[in-house]
Image (tube, rainbow, N blue to C red; front, side):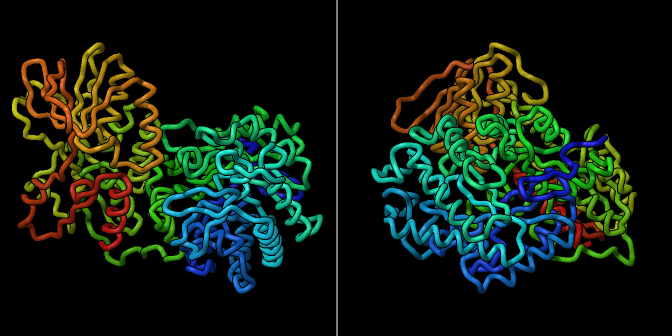
Length: 640
């Protein structure tokens, strides 16, 4: 099939081999001075080899006081040019174009990162810091910094620059009434608030001349009270379309609404396409418009392009999960594309903690500069017990190294807990990852035996050279008086069997599993109440996913109690104790336990005396997330 997304296209002055843009995503792979490293070069070159049309570097700081991450890429000094040239040359050698994103963080950083006072349009607080309102001399200096950075980009050989006026960075801070309370020519009316962005564009254009492409990444909405509305964002785009720019890259959100910046799995694919479409209509398609928001396939991208909503599409996390997505699509190998599961754990989740990024499902992210493990000279027989994500990833890794692999799975199907994890609302597409893993393992030659329980005698009979245990975890049953087996169901049983409608259900445990089970029950006509011992819900998941989860709980009207302990279970009721409250007797027709998991260790203990090495991976080794399973499985299998 021919996809419009994969055909050559023009973005203003820029000729591209296709309409796929790999966007700016901070990696924390650079030196503390913002220098390009081998790691960053290999990371970008991998996406270029995989077929993306345009790559945009991560938010690249133009001034020392505009840096927002400790190991962020910089373009504020001529001494950085040699590394930037090397990055450009590596991407060009792989057939793609590359732009540098020019960024000043404004208030969206900290003194701990910059060592300097924070600047912003107005005095405000961000984290532990208070910002200073920019004086005219500050504004003039930052505009010069944009121009100087753009000129360096041109000298380094970049094909374009992208001016970042979104995601809460400095130009958006001027545009937004949430952060701009100025009373001068840069505040008040929309025309005044957009002035800083206009002047930044003009400064960059004056520096690079008439022929160099400029893309504008524009934030058009903020999900906070008093923030930028879509109406104002679109009106700003109409004003900015009068300037000499080549394309609009339409985004939304900022740090206070991070779930909009990197939409998790629970938000729809193409999250911001309608916003991009509104901009395209407002400017009468006078400039190409780039659309973003968890776009995961060429077919999905084509649907947006065919509808006239966007001209180009961003594929960010999808190209982390599989850099070869464009190439595999061109080759008709869509089934081989490793799916992004939208978990945000390895990418933005690590970045928000000041760490370097990786990917939950692709352990090569950030390791592209390291050689792949060699095929072994003497293949071994690797026995893997468990066909969940840890077991199947280990199988694929061992097979690629040349080993012979047998996988035993006690259930009738592969996937471990993934099929159950895909049952709650908004999680359905997660099931595709289990399908992909099984297909990969079988295609590589794994001997997968489902409905086969591993025992010490069977392990001995199969005579493996090494055993990897990926047998998962088992639910924890809390010692609550009166909690007899006939009075409760496990959360996984509810997800597997489905609920009876109309029941008043008490869910004990308000982590991810408990809250997702509550949504599942509410969608099926039940009336769940979630009781959690901690002070808040869903404290075990990535913050953006948590924010969306809390919104969904509110949307479904699910009752929750925090700082709440279930003291005992009586006939048709549970007795609850909350800090500062009297004892409560809660009527409930069903109790569901979502009180956590502990590693399964029985088989490991039974195999302890065997002569062959035995290694535990994934949940049975203490992991709790898919990313733990993938990383542990890969690391262990690479040592065999």
